[in-house]
Length: 487
Image: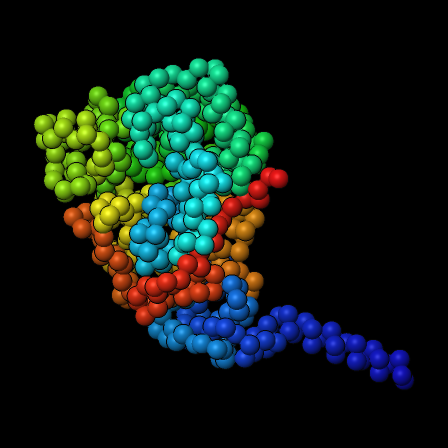
């Protein structure tokens, strides 16, 4: 009899433990720093789309409950959608100015994965404890090559790295600096092959092999853009797909629509075919019909009109907003600076937004209030224009492309990303509360420095950085997204 009672007590104890683990809200009720109540919680991974209450303690989500919770502070999200913070894989603006626009657009993690950074350790140190949102970078082939070849450009090459072919010794220096960046915790290798056109195919292939050895992803701006053969985007995609096959590397093709333009349907077919045959390939696009880059870069070398399908009037000088002429083109190209190119057909932008495998990423940067609207409004534009107005894509699918997919793209090589992009117990409390009926991008090509609206709350690591639709001043809860540093 005693033995039977002990067994009954043991079974009861086990059931209590299982219940506590299965329903953490019951085990931890009333012990939350923040409760987000009454919102429609949407999680693309679990497909949850129901009224729930979130309990947050410290930097983590610790409870998801169908019943009300009590905490030190409660955010009433009635009538709102509560979802994982957006992850921008392609965010050039890694400054406080840009982080503020990102936060207001629902972005909780912004990563510089295309151009990347070097030296990597210094880049991270400059932002530690000073960022509103989470940040991270690859080690960049472009900045490394600029340093080795002594290019005088700032953000992008403008002379030596564009026109000079690296020697064998210089190529080795580039490889060593990239290895050092990976040792310092870089998120992968970033490439801007189009900006360094003298780079040989062998150099790119060898770096793909290095990425395979280090088990990181290659984030690639391809060698060519447009549809003119030879030198089309299709040819450029064939190069990196071939390198991926031969090296066993992981490949992410950046801003597909602005590179492939009217060839985007074919390029998507190529990527989908590669994925279907086992290659680890992904891509991204931003939801706008114009590009932006430096006018003094290799993108606008002789023949750009035919390659990109543009004329001078399709170019908009960022500093003044004016459309260019042959005279102002020559003047500003010599001077150097940023230009917007109105070259992406609307149907191409819509195609990318509607494709289930195309990640949403901004490619954005605002500098002293100037830039492209993608730097401030990318994510709200998808939600307001393409989801609500155009009905191009459903809300859950849009959220998946802005949170879960980018987290999954990195999580194999960056373990901390496994707790990003999800609403689940144990996930990081990077959370967006948005009004699906009101969310809208306000940024325009004429005035890009305008915050998105309809996103009243944004939490980063459990701290509200946007509250009642306004930025909270004086707090910097963003943390580094980084691979383990090699000792």
